Amino acid sequence: MHAFAQLLDSLIYTRSRNAKLKLIGDYLRATPDPDRGWVMAALTGDLDLPAVKPAVIRGLIEARVDPVLFRMSRDYVGDTAETIALLWPGADDGAGEPLSVSAVVDTLNSLSRSDAPAALAAMLDRMDAEERFALLKMATGALRIGVSARLAKTALAQAFSVGVDAVEEVWHAIRPPYAELFDWIEGRGEQPTAADVPVFRPFMLAHPLDELRVDLKDYAAEWKWDGIRVQLVRVGGETRLYSRAGDDITGSFPDVASAFATPGVLDGELMVKGEFQGGEAASFNALQQRLGRKAVSGKVLADYPAFVRLYDILFDGREDLRPLPWTERRARLEAFAAGLDPDRFDVSALIDAADFEALEDIRAGARDAAIEGVMLKRRDSDYVAGRRTGLWYKWKRDPLSADCVMMYAQRGNGRRSSYYSDYTFGCWTGDPEDGGELLPVGKAYSGITDDELKMLDSFVRNHTLNRFGPVREVEKTLVLEVAFDSIHESKRHKSGVAMRFPRIHRIRTDKPAAEADRLDTLRRMIT
Image (cartoon, rainbow, N blue to C red; front, side, top):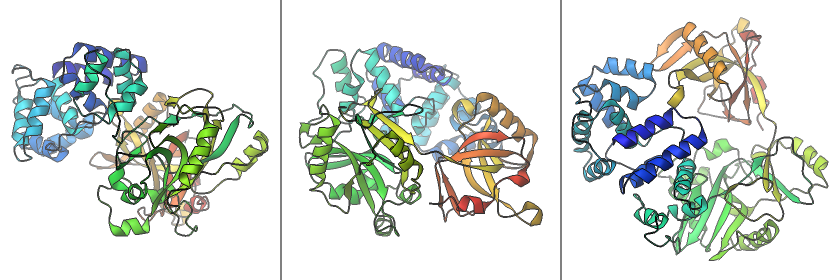
Protein backbone atom coordinates (compact mmCIF):
# COMPACT_ATOMS: atom_id res chain seq x y z
CA MET A 1 0.00 0.00 0.00
CA HIS A 2 2.91 2.35 0.62
CA ALA A 3 3.78 2.77 -3.08
CA PHE A 4 0.11 3.32 -3.96
CA ALA A 5 -0.20 5.89 -1.17
CA GLN A 6 2.84 7.75 -2.50
CA LEU A 7 1.33 7.69 -6.00
CA LEU A 8 -1.93 9.23 -4.77
CA ASP A 9 -0.09 11.87 -2.77
CA SER A 10 2.01 12.83 -5.79
CA LEU A 11 -1.00 12.96 -8.14
CA ILE A 12 -2.95 15.21 -5.78
CA TYR A 13 -0.21 17.85 -5.83
CA THR A 14 0.59 17.55 -9.54
CA ARG A 15 -1.35 19.72 -11.96
CA SER A 16 0.55 18.96 -15.17
CA ARG A 17 -1.13 16.32 -17.34
CA ASN A 18 2.20 15.06 -18.66
CA ALA A 19 3.60 14.80 -15.15
CA LYS A 20 0.58 12.76 -14.07
CA LEU A 21 1.01 10.44 -17.05
CA LYS A 22 4.63 9.86 -16.06
CA LEU A 23 3.79 9.23 -12.40
CA ILE A 24 1.19 6.59 -13.27
CA GLY A 25 3.38 5.02 -15.95
CA ASP A 26 6.38 4.77 -13.62
CA TYR A 27 4.20 3.12 -10.97
CA LEU A 28 2.75 0.57 -13.41
CA ARG A 29 6.19 -0.42 -14.71
CA ALA A 30 7.63 -0.83 -11.22
CA THR A 31 4.70 -2.60 -9.56
CA PRO A 32 4.03 -6.33 -9.92
CA ASP A 33 0.75 -8.04 -10.70
CA PRO A 34 -1.91 -8.05 -9.39
CA ASP A 35 -1.34 -4.85 -7.38
CA ARG A 36 -0.99 -2.65 -10.46
CA GLY A 37 -4.15 -4.11 -11.95
CA TRP A 38 -6.19 -3.27 -8.86
CA VAL A 39 -4.70 0.23 -8.82
CA MET A 40 -5.73 0.70 -12.46
CA ALA A 41 -9.23 -0.41 -11.47
CA ALA A 42 -9.23 2.20 -8.69
CA LEU A 43 -7.97 4.97 -10.99
CA THR A 44 -10.58 4.18 -13.65
CA GLY A 45 -13.51 3.73 -11.27
CA ASP A 46 -13.81 -0.01 -11.92
CA LEU A 47 -12.97 -1.16 -8.39
CA ASP A 48 -16.04 -2.11 -6.36
CA LEU A 49 -15.80 -3.11 -2.70
CA PRO A 50 -19.48 -3.49 -1.78
CA ALA A 51 -18.83 -4.36 1.86
CA VAL A 52 -17.35 -0.91 2.56
CA LYS A 53 -19.62 2.11 2.40
CA PRO A 54 -19.06 5.70 3.59
CA ALA A 55 -21.49 5.16 6.48
CA VAL A 56 -19.38 2.23 7.71
CA ILE A 57 -16.24 4.36 7.68
CA ARG A 58 -17.95 7.21 9.52
CA GLY A 59 -19.18 4.71 12.10
CA LEU A 60 -15.64 3.46 12.67
CA ILE A 61 -14.17 6.88 13.36
CA GLU A 62 -17.09 8.04 15.52
CA ALA A 63 -16.62 4.94 17.68
CA ARG A 64 -13.02 6.02 18.41
CA VAL A 65 -13.19 9.82 18.26
CA ASP A 66 -15.75 12.24 19.62
CA PRO A 67 -18.34 12.67 16.81
CA VAL A 68 -18.46 16.44 17.26
CA LEU A 69 -14.67 16.66 16.96
CA PHE A 70 -14.80 14.53 13.82
CA ARG A 71 -17.49 16.66 12.17
CA MET A 72 -15.69 19.88 13.03
CA SER A 73 -12.42 18.45 11.71
CA ARG A 74 -14.15 17.22 8.55
CA ASP A 75 -15.55 20.70 8.00
CA TYR A 76 -12.07 22.22 8.33
CA VAL A 77 -10.17 19.63 6.25
CA GLY A 78 -12.84 19.28 3.58
CA ASP A 79 -12.26 15.58 2.84
CA THR A 80 -13.55 12.60 4.85
CA ALA A 81 -10.71 10.21 4.00
CA GLU A 82 -8.03 12.75 4.86
CA THR A 83 -9.76 13.68 8.12
CA ILE A 84 -10.02 10.07 9.27
CA ALA A 85 -6.47 9.28 8.16
CA LEU A 86 -5.16 12.10 10.36
CA LEU A 87 -7.49 11.56 13.33
CA TRP A 88 -7.35 7.76 13.54
CA PRO A 89 -6.17 6.91 17.11
CA GLY A 90 -4.15 4.02 18.42
CA ALA A 91 -2.40 3.42 15.11
CA ASP A 92 1.04 1.90 14.78
CA ASP A 93 1.95 4.57 12.20
CA GLY A 94 3.25 2.05 9.72
CA ALA A 95 4.99 -0.19 12.28
CA GLY A 96 2.77 -3.13 11.37
CA GLU A 97 3.58 -5.63 8.63
CA PRO A 98 3.18 -3.94 5.21
CA LEU A 99 0.00 -4.71 3.31
CA SER A 100 -0.18 -5.05 -0.46
CA VAL A 101 -3.02 -3.57 -2.50
CA SER A 102 -4.13 -7.04 -3.59
CA ALA A 103 -4.20 -8.27 0.02
CA VAL A 104 -6.49 -5.37 0.97
CA VAL A 105 -8.81 -5.99 -1.99
CA ASP A 106 -8.92 -9.75 -1.48
CA THR A 107 -9.68 -9.37 2.23
CA LEU A 108 -12.45 -6.80 1.82
CA ASN A 109 -14.00 -8.70 -1.10
CA SER A 110 -14.12 -11.93 0.89
CA LEU A 111 -15.94 -10.51 3.90
CA SER A 112 -19.60 -9.86 4.55
CA ARG A 113 -20.86 -6.39 5.37
CA SER A 114 -21.02 -7.33 9.04
CA ASP A 115 -17.41 -8.55 9.16
CA ALA A 116 -15.83 -5.88 6.94
CA PRO A 117 -15.78 -3.00 9.51
CA ALA A 118 -13.58 -4.89 11.99
CA ALA A 119 -11.19 -5.99 9.25
CA LEU A 120 -10.97 -2.44 7.88
CA ALA A 121 -10.28 -1.05 11.35
CA ALA A 122 -7.49 -3.60 11.85
CA MET A 123 -5.89 -2.50 8.57
CA LEU A 124 -6.09 1.16 9.54
CA ASP A 125 -4.42 0.37 12.87
CA ARG A 126 -1.30 -1.01 11.19
CA MET A 127 -0.86 1.80 8.64
CA ASP A 128 0.57 5.29 8.72
CA ALA A 129 -1.56 8.32 7.84
CA GLU A 130 -0.56 8.33 4.17
CA GLU A 131 -1.51 4.66 3.75
CA ARG A 132 -4.77 5.12 5.67
CA PHE A 133 -5.72 7.92 3.29
CA ALA A 134 -5.01 5.71 0.26
CA LEU A 135 -6.94 2.78 1.73
CA LEU A 136 -10.02 4.87 2.48
CA LYS A 137 -9.97 6.52 -0.94
CA MET A 138 -9.68 3.14 -2.62
CA ALA A 139 -12.36 1.55 -0.44
CA THR A 140 -14.98 4.22 -1.18
CA GLY A 141 -14.09 4.61 -4.87
CA ALA A 142 -13.98 8.41 -4.55
CA LEU A 143 -10.35 9.24 -5.38
CA ARG A 144 -10.88 12.81 -6.63
CA ILE A 145 -7.24 13.27 -7.58
CA GLY A 146 -7.67 14.90 -10.97
CA VAL A 147 -7.21 11.67 -12.94
CA SER A 148 -9.90 10.58 -15.39
CA ALA A 149 -10.34 7.01 -16.59
CA ARG A 150 -9.11 8.09 -20.01
CA LEU A 151 -5.94 9.65 -18.58
CA ALA A 152 -5.16 6.49 -16.57
CA LYS A 153 -5.57 4.33 -19.69
CA THR A 154 -3.42 6.75 -21.67
CA ALA A 155 -0.69 6.47 -19.02
CA LEU A 156 -0.86 2.68 -19.24
CA ALA A 157 -0.64 2.76 -23.03
CA GLN A 158 2.28 5.17 -23.08
CA ALA A 159 4.16 3.27 -20.37
CA PHE A 160 4.12 0.08 -22.44
CA SER A 161 4.19 1.64 -25.95
CA VAL A 162 0.77 0.46 -27.13
CA GLY A 163 -2.11 2.43 -28.60
CA VAL A 164 -4.62 3.81 -26.10
CA ASP A 165 -7.41 3.03 -28.57
CA ALA A 166 -6.36 -0.63 -28.53
CA VAL A 167 -6.54 -0.58 -24.72
CA GLU A 168 -9.97 1.08 -24.76
CA GLU A 169 -11.23 -1.44 -27.34
CA VAL A 170 -10.84 -4.38 -24.98
CA TRP A 171 -11.13 -2.68 -21.59
CA HIS A 172 -14.74 -3.65 -20.94
CA ALA A 173 -14.20 -7.20 -22.14
CA ILE A 174 -11.81 -8.03 -19.28
CA ARG A 175 -12.11 -7.75 -15.54
CA PRO A 176 -9.77 -6.38 -12.86
CA PRO A 177 -6.92 -6.97 -12.15
CA TYR A 178 -6.53 -7.20 -15.98
CA ALA A 179 -4.06 -10.10 -16.10
CA GLU A 180 -4.71 -10.71 -19.83
CA LEU A 181 -4.08 -7.05 -20.61
CA PHE A 182 -0.71 -6.93 -18.83
CA ASP A 183 0.29 -10.27 -20.38
CA TRP A 184 -0.34 -8.78 -23.82
CA ILE A 185 1.41 -5.42 -23.33
CA GLU A 186 4.46 -7.15 -21.82
CA GLY A 187 4.63 -9.72 -24.61
CA ARG A 188 3.58 -12.82 -22.67
CA GLY A 189 0.23 -13.37 -24.38
CA GLU A 190 -2.03 -12.56 -27.28
CA GLN A 191 -3.95 -9.32 -27.55
CA PRO A 192 -7.36 -9.73 -25.85
CA THR A 193 -10.32 -9.67 -28.22
CA ALA A 194 -13.74 -8.12 -27.86
CA ALA A 195 -15.45 -10.53 -30.25
CA ASP A 196 -19.01 -11.46 -29.20
CA VAL A 197 -18.77 -9.18 -26.14
CA PRO A 198 -20.78 -5.91 -26.06
CA VAL A 199 -17.83 -3.66 -25.23
CA PHE A 200 -17.50 0.10 -25.26
CA ARG A 201 -15.53 1.83 -28.03
CA PRO A 202 -14.09 5.30 -27.45
CA PHE A 203 -16.21 8.15 -28.81
CA MET A 204 -15.11 10.53 -31.51
CA LEU A 205 -15.05 14.00 -29.96
CA ALA A 206 -15.10 17.56 -31.27
CA HIS A 207 -12.98 20.65 -30.78
CA PRO A 208 -14.67 23.98 -29.94
CA LEU A 209 -15.10 26.07 -33.08
CA ASP A 210 -14.17 29.34 -31.33
CA GLU A 211 -13.36 31.97 -33.98
CA LEU A 212 -12.68 29.48 -36.78
CA ARG A 213 -14.93 29.50 -39.86
CA VAL A 214 -15.25 26.53 -42.22
CA ASP A 215 -16.55 25.90 -45.73
CA LEU A 216 -19.84 23.99 -45.74
CA LYS A 217 -18.73 22.27 -48.93
CA ASP A 218 -16.28 20.37 -46.74
CA TYR A 219 -18.36 20.16 -43.56
CA ALA A 220 -21.88 18.95 -42.80
CA ALA A 221 -23.86 20.75 -40.08
CA GLU A 222 -26.30 19.19 -37.66
CA TRP A 223 -27.80 20.19 -34.33
CA LYS A 224 -25.96 19.43 -31.10
CA TRP A 225 -28.69 18.05 -28.83
CA ASP A 226 -28.86 18.56 -25.09
CA GLY A 227 -29.05 15.05 -23.65
CA ILE A 228 -26.26 12.63 -22.79
CA ARG A 229 -24.01 11.04 -25.38
CA VAL A 230 -24.50 7.27 -25.51
CA GLN A 231 -23.22 4.29 -27.40
CA LEU A 232 -25.62 1.46 -28.25
CA VAL A 233 -23.98 -1.94 -28.63
CA ARG A 234 -25.72 -5.13 -29.76
CA VAL A 235 -23.59 -8.25 -30.19
CA GLY A 236 -23.78 -11.89 -29.17
CA GLY A 237 -27.46 -11.54 -28.31
CA GLU A 238 -26.78 -8.82 -25.70
CA THR A 239 -27.45 -5.08 -25.71
CA ARG A 240 -25.54 -2.49 -23.71
CA LEU A 241 -25.83 1.27 -23.37
CA TYR A 242 -22.65 3.12 -22.46
CA SER A 243 -22.20 6.72 -21.39
CA ARG A 244 -19.48 8.96 -22.75
CA ALA A 245 -17.23 7.87 -19.87
CA GLY A 246 -17.78 4.20 -20.74
CA ASP A 247 -20.13 3.52 -17.80
CA ASP A 248 -22.75 0.83 -18.40
CA ILE A 249 -26.15 2.56 -18.01
CA THR A 250 -28.26 -0.23 -19.51
CA GLY A 251 -30.13 -0.81 -16.25
CA SER A 252 -31.27 2.81 -16.08
CA PHE A 253 -32.78 2.69 -19.59
CA PRO A 254 -34.28 -0.78 -20.09
CA ASP A 255 -36.90 0.64 -22.46
CA VAL A 256 -34.21 1.76 -24.92
CA ALA A 257 -32.06 -1.35 -24.49
CA SER A 258 -34.92 -3.76 -25.14
CA ALA A 259 -35.85 -1.88 -28.34
CA PHE A 260 -32.35 -2.23 -29.82
CA ALA A 261 -32.13 -5.80 -31.11
CA THR A 262 -30.24 -5.37 -34.40
CA PRO A 263 -26.53 -6.28 -34.23
CA GLY A 264 -24.40 -3.16 -34.53
CA VAL A 265 -22.87 -0.22 -32.67
CA LEU A 266 -24.42 3.25 -32.84
CA ASP A 267 -23.48 6.69 -31.50
CA GLY A 268 -26.24 9.07 -30.44
CA GLU A 269 -27.84 11.39 -27.89
CA LEU A 270 -30.09 9.93 -25.20
CA MET A 271 -33.07 12.17 -24.43
CA VAL A 272 -36.63 12.14 -23.11
CA LYS A 273 -39.70 12.87 -25.20
CA GLY A 274 -41.44 16.15 -24.46
CA GLU A 275 -44.92 15.90 -23.00
CA PHE A 276 -46.27 18.88 -24.91
CA GLN A 277 -44.03 18.72 -27.95
CA GLY A 278 -45.61 15.95 -29.99
CA GLY A 279 -42.94 13.47 -28.98
CA GLU A 280 -40.03 15.79 -29.74
CA ALA A 281 -37.12 16.08 -27.32
CA ALA A 282 -37.73 17.59 -23.90
CA SER A 283 -35.16 19.63 -21.97
CA PHE A 284 -32.29 18.07 -20.08
CA ASN A 285 -34.24 18.70 -16.89
CA ALA A 286 -36.67 15.93 -17.92
CA LEU A 287 -33.82 13.52 -18.63
CA GLN A 288 -32.45 14.10 -15.13
CA GLN A 289 -35.49 12.28 -13.75
CA ARG A 290 -34.08 9.11 -15.33
CA LEU A 291 -30.37 9.48 -14.64
CA GLY A 292 -28.64 7.54 -11.87
CA ARG A 293 -31.55 5.20 -11.15
CA LYS A 294 -30.59 1.57 -10.60
CA ALA A 295 -34.25 0.51 -10.62
CA VAL A 296 -36.76 2.27 -12.87
CA SER A 297 -40.44 2.08 -11.96
CA GLY A 298 -43.22 1.71 -14.47
CA LYS A 299 -44.43 5.23 -13.63
CA VAL A 300 -41.01 6.75 -14.42
CA LEU A 301 -40.86 4.80 -17.69
CA ALA A 302 -44.29 6.11 -18.64
CA ASP A 303 -43.77 9.71 -17.49
CA TYR A 304 -40.28 10.10 -19.00
CA PRO A 305 -40.04 7.88 -22.10
CA ALA A 306 -36.45 7.80 -23.38
CA PHE A 307 -35.25 7.69 -26.96
CA VAL A 308 -31.96 8.07 -28.84
CA ARG A 309 -31.30 10.58 -31.59
CA LEU A 310 -28.64 8.89 -33.71
CA TYR A 311 -25.45 10.61 -34.86
CA ASP A 312 -23.25 7.91 -36.35
CA ILE A 313 -22.70 4.19 -36.91
CA LEU A 314 -19.52 2.36 -35.90
CA PHE A 315 -20.49 -1.24 -36.72
CA ASP A 316 -23.18 -2.69 -38.95
CA GLY A 317 -23.41 -6.22 -37.63
CA ARG A 318 -19.78 -7.37 -37.47
CA GLU A 319 -18.64 -4.93 -40.19
CA ASP A 320 -16.43 -2.16 -38.82
CA LEU A 321 -17.50 1.07 -40.53
CA ARG A 322 -15.20 3.44 -38.63
CA PRO A 323 -12.62 3.67 -41.46
CA LEU A 324 -15.30 4.88 -43.91
CA PRO A 325 -15.75 8.62 -44.57
CA TRP A 326 -18.58 10.37 -42.77
CA THR A 327 -20.72 10.65 -45.93
CA GLU A 328 -20.71 6.86 -46.39
CA ARG A 329 -21.34 6.21 -42.69
CA ARG A 330 -24.24 8.66 -42.77
CA ALA A 331 -25.88 6.73 -45.62
CA ARG A 332 -25.32 3.44 -43.77
CA LEU A 333 -26.75 4.96 -40.57
CA GLU A 334 -29.93 6.07 -42.32
CA ALA A 335 -30.38 2.62 -43.84
CA PHE A 336 -29.72 0.93 -40.49
CA ALA A 337 -32.10 3.23 -38.60
CA ALA A 338 -34.92 2.53 -41.04
CA GLY A 339 -35.25 -0.92 -39.45
CA LEU A 340 -35.43 0.38 -35.85
CA ASP A 341 -38.43 1.28 -33.70
CA PRO A 342 -39.27 4.91 -34.63
CA ASP A 343 -40.64 5.52 -31.12
CA ARG A 344 -37.19 4.88 -29.67
CA PHE A 345 -34.76 5.92 -32.40
CA ASP A 346 -34.45 8.63 -35.02
CA VAL A 347 -31.58 10.15 -36.98
CA SER A 348 -30.34 13.64 -36.14
CA ALA A 349 -31.36 15.86 -39.06
CA LEU A 350 -28.80 17.84 -41.03
CA ILE A 351 -29.07 21.63 -41.16
CA ASP A 352 -29.74 23.01 -44.61
CA ALA A 353 -27.64 26.17 -44.93
CA ALA A 354 -26.35 27.73 -48.14
CA ASP A 355 -23.13 28.97 -46.52
CA PHE A 356 -21.55 29.68 -43.16
CA GLU A 357 -23.21 33.09 -42.85
CA ALA A 358 -26.62 31.48 -43.29
CA LEU A 359 -25.71 28.87 -40.68
CA GLU A 360 -24.81 31.65 -38.23
CA ASP A 361 -28.30 33.12 -38.63
CA ILE A 362 -29.93 29.72 -38.13
CA ARG A 363 -27.87 29.03 -35.00
CA ALA A 364 -28.61 32.48 -33.55
CA GLY A 365 -32.35 31.83 -33.81
CA ALA A 366 -32.23 28.40 -32.16
CA ARG A 367 -33.60 28.51 -28.63
CA ASP A 368 -35.26 25.11 -28.51
CA ALA A 369 -34.86 23.69 -25.00
CA ALA A 370 -33.23 20.55 -26.38
CA ILE A 371 -30.71 22.27 -28.67
CA GLU A 372 -27.26 22.96 -27.26
CA GLY A 373 -25.65 24.24 -30.43
CA VAL A 374 -24.34 23.05 -33.80
CA MET A 375 -21.96 20.26 -34.82
CA LEU A 376 -19.75 20.57 -37.89
CA LYS A 377 -18.39 17.30 -39.27
CA ARG A 378 -15.86 17.01 -42.06
CA ARG A 379 -17.51 15.01 -44.83
CA ASP A 380 -14.45 12.84 -45.53
CA SER A 381 -13.59 12.13 -41.86
CA ASP A 382 -13.35 8.57 -40.60
CA TYR A 383 -14.54 7.77 -37.06
CA VAL A 384 -11.50 8.10 -34.81
CA ALA A 385 -11.34 8.04 -31.01
CA GLY A 386 -10.77 11.28 -29.15
CA ARG A 387 -10.36 14.79 -30.55
CA ARG A 388 -8.56 15.15 -33.87
CA THR A 389 -7.95 18.65 -35.16
CA GLY A 390 -9.88 19.59 -38.26
CA LEU A 391 -12.43 16.76 -38.26
CA TRP A 392 -15.35 17.60 -35.95
CA TYR A 393 -16.20 20.94 -34.34
CA LYS A 394 -18.82 21.90 -31.76
CA TRP A 395 -20.33 25.35 -31.88
CA LYS A 396 -22.38 25.86 -28.75
CA ARG A 397 -25.03 28.53 -28.68
CA ASP A 398 -24.14 31.66 -26.74
CA PRO A 399 -24.74 31.25 -23.00
CA LEU A 400 -27.40 33.10 -21.08
CA SER A 401 -26.43 35.11 -18.03
CA ALA A 402 -27.93 36.63 -14.91
CA ASP A 403 -26.71 38.72 -11.99
CA CYS A 404 -27.25 36.71 -8.80
CA VAL A 405 -26.47 37.20 -5.11
CA MET A 406 -24.25 34.75 -3.21
CA MET A 407 -26.24 33.14 -0.39
CA TYR A 408 -24.27 30.10 0.82
CA ALA A 409 -20.81 28.59 0.40
CA GLN A 410 -19.29 25.19 0.99
CA ARG A 411 -15.76 23.81 0.92
CA GLY A 412 -14.64 22.12 -2.27
CA ASN A 413 -12.86 18.83 -2.79
CA GLY A 414 -9.35 17.79 -3.83
CA ARG A 415 -6.93 20.68 -4.11
CA ARG A 416 -9.78 23.12 -3.39
CA SER A 417 -10.70 21.42 -0.11
CA SER A 418 -9.13 24.25 1.92
CA TYR A 419 -11.24 26.93 0.20
CA TYR A 420 -14.91 27.78 0.18
CA SER A 421 -15.35 27.19 -3.54
CA ASP A 422 -18.93 25.91 -4.04
CA TYR A 423 -21.36 28.82 -4.11
CA THR A 424 -25.16 28.85 -3.95
CA PHE A 425 -26.70 32.01 -5.38
CA GLY A 426 -30.17 33.44 -5.72
CA CYS A 427 -32.40 36.03 -7.38
CA TRP A 428 -35.07 38.32 -5.97
CA THR A 429 -38.77 37.48 -5.98
CA GLY A 430 -39.45 41.20 -6.22
CA ASP A 431 -38.12 44.57 -5.11
CA PRO A 432 -35.97 43.86 -2.00
CA GLU A 433 -37.07 47.19 -0.49
CA ASP A 434 -40.71 46.18 -0.89
CA GLY A 435 -40.68 42.70 0.63
CA GLY A 436 -38.86 40.83 -2.12
CA GLU A 437 -36.75 37.89 -0.93
CA LEU A 438 -33.85 35.93 -2.32
CA LEU A 439 -34.50 32.36 -3.48
CA PRO A 440 -31.70 30.02 -4.60
CA VAL A 441 -31.56 29.45 -8.36
CA GLY A 442 -28.30 27.55 -8.75
CA LYS A 443 -24.93 26.40 -7.48
CA ALA A 444 -21.56 26.76 -9.19
CA TYR A 445 -17.91 26.04 -8.52
CA SER A 446 -16.28 26.70 -11.88
CA GLY A 447 -15.34 29.67 -14.03
CA ILE A 448 -13.07 31.48 -11.57
CA THR A 449 -9.30 31.92 -11.45
CA ASP A 450 -7.17 30.98 -8.45
CA ASP A 451 -6.93 34.65 -7.44
CA GLU A 452 -10.71 35.03 -7.63
CA LEU A 453 -11.11 31.84 -5.60
CA LYS A 454 -8.98 33.30 -2.83
CA MET A 455 -10.96 36.54 -2.95
CA LEU A 456 -14.30 34.71 -2.66
CA ASP A 457 -12.98 32.46 0.12
CA SER A 458 -11.94 35.54 2.07
CA PHE A 459 -15.38 37.08 1.53
CA VAL A 460 -17.09 33.93 2.86
CA ARG A 461 -14.91 33.77 5.99
CA ASN A 462 -15.36 37.47 6.78
CA HIS A 463 -19.09 37.67 6.07
CA THR A 464 -20.49 34.49 7.59
CA LEU A 465 -23.91 34.77 9.25
CA ASN A 466 -24.64 31.13 10.16
CA ARG A 467 -23.08 27.69 9.91
CA PHE A 468 -24.98 24.54 8.90
CA GLY A 469 -22.43 21.71 9.11
CA PRO A 470 -20.01 22.28 6.21
CA VAL A 471 -22.18 25.08 4.76
CA ARG A 472 -21.88 28.76 5.62
CA GLU A 473 -24.62 31.30 5.12
CA VAL A 474 -23.12 34.65 4.10
CA GLU A 475 -24.25 38.25 4.06
CA LYS A 476 -26.34 38.86 0.93
CA THR A 477 -24.13 41.63 -0.45
CA LEU A 478 -21.96 40.10 -3.20
CA VAL A 479 -23.24 39.86 -6.79
CA LEU A 480 -22.00 37.14 -9.15
CA GLU A 481 -22.65 37.26 -12.87
CA VAL A 482 -23.58 33.66 -13.67
CA ALA A 483 -23.49 32.20 -17.18
CA PHE A 484 -25.60 29.13 -18.01
CA ASP A 485 -26.60 27.18 -21.09
CA SER A 486 -30.36 27.16 -20.48
CA ILE A 487 -32.95 27.39 -17.73
CA HIS A 488 -35.96 25.20 -17.06
CA GLU A 489 -38.93 24.91 -14.74
CA SER A 490 -38.24 22.72 -11.72
CA LYS A 491 -40.61 21.41 -9.05
CA ARG A 492 -37.62 20.40 -6.89
CA HIS A 493 -36.51 23.98 -6.23
CA LYS A 494 -38.40 26.58 -4.21
CA SER A 495 -37.63 29.18 -6.88
CA GLY A 496 -39.32 27.00 -9.51
CA VAL A 497 -36.35 27.16 -11.90
CA ALA A 498 -33.13 25.24 -12.48
CA MET A 499 -30.06 26.33 -14.45
CA ARG A 500 -28.20 24.06 -16.85
CA PHE A 501 -24.38 24.17 -16.47
CA PRO A 502 -24.11 27.34 -14.36
CA ARG A 503 -20.63 28.83 -13.97
CA ILE A 504 -19.35 32.09 -12.55
CA HIS A 505 -18.58 34.52 -15.34
CA ARG A 506 -17.70 37.62 -13.35
CA ILE A 507 -17.59 38.93 -9.77
CA ARG A 508 -19.68 42.11 -9.75
CA THR A 509 -18.21 44.07 -6.83
CA ASP A 510 -19.43 47.16 -8.67
CA LYS A 511 -23.12 46.21 -8.40
CA PRO A 512 -25.32 46.53 -5.30
CA ALA A 513 -27.12 43.33 -4.32
CA ALA A 514 -30.51 45.05 -4.60
CA GLU A 515 -29.88 45.47 -8.35
CA ALA A 516 -29.41 41.75 -9.01
CA ASP A 517 -31.88 40.09 -11.33
CA ARG A 518 -35.45 39.10 -10.48
CA LEU A 519 -36.90 35.61 -10.84
CA ASP A 520 -39.30 36.92 -13.49
CA THR A 521 -36.27 37.76 -15.64
CA LEU A 522 -35.06 34.16 -15.42
CA ARG A 523 -38.52 32.75 -16.11
CA ARG A 524 -38.68 34.72 -19.34
CA MET A 525 -35.55 32.85 -20.48
CA ILE A 526 -37.28 29.45 -20.20
CA THR A 527 -37.73 27.85 -23.63
